Every structure is written in structure tokens, then in C-alpha cells.
Length: 203
Image (cartoon, rainbow, N blue to C red; front, side, top):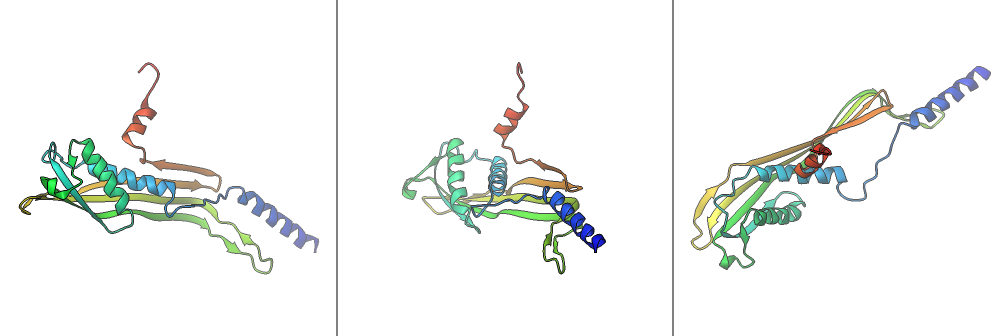
């Protein structure tokens, strides 16, 4: 009896110790902040590969098409980006020289996982949940964006050109090793953030 009791106490102590390494992440929005940044950065990187020379100095109307609910935000982001690159956006399509039909066939975050260890489980009879014990765990999040622009003459409705698909990708990897070692790797920073991180006094 004493032996059984001591085993239960040791098991409970082990649960408490391993439980210290377990963290709970709660998202109060449809997308977590990491997912939002992955999407925005991948979209930025896709736009950065687009050639805007034929649009500069001209007035354009913009229609944006996407397969997800993120299309409203990305449309406004695209319009602001075009304005930054000296493209005038017409509020009235009749005043535009060009009609830009923009398609985002890909705008999503994918997730994958590698795991070596013991998954969480409920202990029979005792009824409490044994937490996950990760010898190695990697949760991979990757953002993907693809943009294509069809250019049409607003006055005649004649097709002018189609851009090559512009692709942008980002990643965020979350590692856990031997329960207690935890770190992340990511390329999620914007160009501005990278410059701030690389800055040194006197540089």
C-alpha cells in the first residue's frame, strides 16, 4: 500500500513539473497575431516583385478578387501600395485610364507539425490528464500570397497586359526540445524592422 501511494505521489510530482513547461495560447480574433503578420508580410513580398512601370503617372480603377475574407484588407493595402508607387487611383472609374483587375488566388497560412514524444492522455482510474511530453516538437506556420494583375484600357475595354504571378512567402517555426528548451525561428520581419534590428551605434 505504501509502495503504491509513493508511486502515485511521484507521478503527481512529475505531472506538476512537466506542467510547468506547458503554455496555453489564446486567440481572441479569427487569426492570431502571428498569422496576421505572416499574411501581411507574404503579401508585401509578393507586391515587391511586381513591375509597376506601366502604371506610373496614370490613373487607374482597381477591382480585387480573392478566395478568402482577407480580400477586403488586402485590396486597400494594394491600393495604398499603388499610390506609394505613383499610381493615381480614380474614385470614379469613368475618370480612369486603366482598369486593373487584381486576383489573389493564394492568400493563406499553412501549418504542419513534427513531434517525437508522448502525447497527452487521460490516466485510467485516476482520471487526470497527463500533459504532452515533447522530446522534440516543431510547429511550422507558413504564409503564402500570390498576385496577378490584368490591365485593361478603361475607355475601350481592350486587354493590354497581364503580369507574371507575383509570389511571396514567410515562415514561423516554433521548436520545443526535451520539454524545457523552447525557441522560434522566423523571417516574418518587414524590411523596416530588419533595418532596425541590424542598426548599431555609430553605424
